Length: 408
Length: 100
Image 1 (cartoon, rainbow over the protein chains, first blue to last red):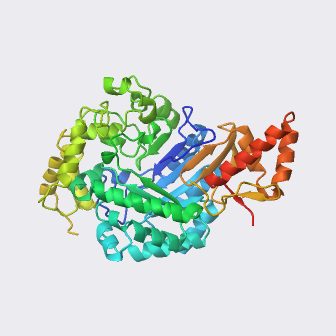
Image 2 (cartoon, rainbow over the protein chains, first blue to last red):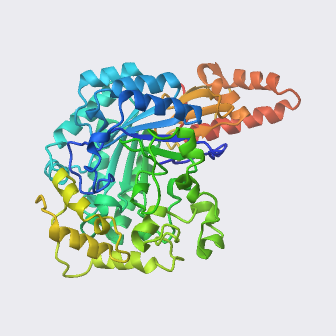
Image 3 (tube, each protein chain N blue to C red):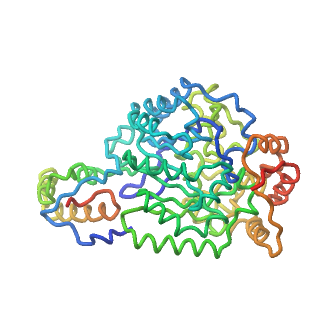
């Protein structure tokens, strides 16, 4: 996500400055907050070829894309990653690798360095080995720490990305100490956002306001202590903000994501919105998809906005929030994001918070992201993706009833 | 973000260099200089680009000011003041670092 732009604020001037390539949905980890679609196995055979990805890279650069993210799934599972990084570097992109670290050997690090990779974002879920390994459904902690040190040893700028939720929000100080020891340049505490797998597990993952405030205080103290040695981001969860996030800087404004099968999306979650057409780069040029496709044009500007948003003095600031969240919670993507306190649907957010923290609530096992659960949730797609408006919690309960759960 | 370790303003004899975390280059599609860094882009206006281009760890601040005064003739005092102000802002943002 874009952070601070200053001196001259960079609006896209209609260009997709950020191109994100989801090279694959395959992943060795099973994180129950994964942002990939819950039915990710559906088009598993349809991954773009090396030549097709290269075409995306060329056409993206022609459209003015500057920042490039290689993500997934786990992008290291693509054996052509180095080749794609080399092509991207030659074209003039700033290249970011977003990885779990699994599969990042010293040999591959050297090859990626030689290919011109600019930076690596490594995920870490906890400062504790046992909790990490349980949450991601694999023995990953020791490997991640080793990979983190390797990344710094080879001189890459490094972002340590920590998805934040109820299980790890109390570990801010321990994670800070780990990050300091590794020597990371940017530490990003990213409160998870409740879509896809995270939505299925929302009641278990959503932290309380008190937990958030404590975590934020620890981050503030660390910022004062560390000064410029480490940049620390703390991405606030919109459920507690009262204001919606300026999602993607606006729909189709600067972000362009390509799914493993070549489908072009304004953000990684957009495919959950029903009723929109999502053509692939196999059918159309990237320029057509970005400039002309009805899906990308749908929520640009403010004509699509509800009266709540169109008359709002903050519409230039937050663009009405997130279209996917509006769809997921209210059933209509053109509604004001319910995270906004001015939304007529804001009670859905407060109710979700209350439900997740209701006294006496019975904890459920986390639904891990794996192929079996994906097939089951895919068969039950209407509910798992929130098609039943108003009932996100009921949805995940319904999903739990039919999903065979990996116990954690 | 403030640089708590070195809060003093830039001085004439100091040298500044780009923070190696940032990539500085001309970007034709923006018709400007840009700073690229993990997940971020800063588009620089012409003056900012002129200054950062010269933060090479070799030139002193005094030399940098003199070059900018040649490039923007007219009001030397204003140019000097502008350079000092920009350097302080850039350092606070972490884009450039004072050389030891």
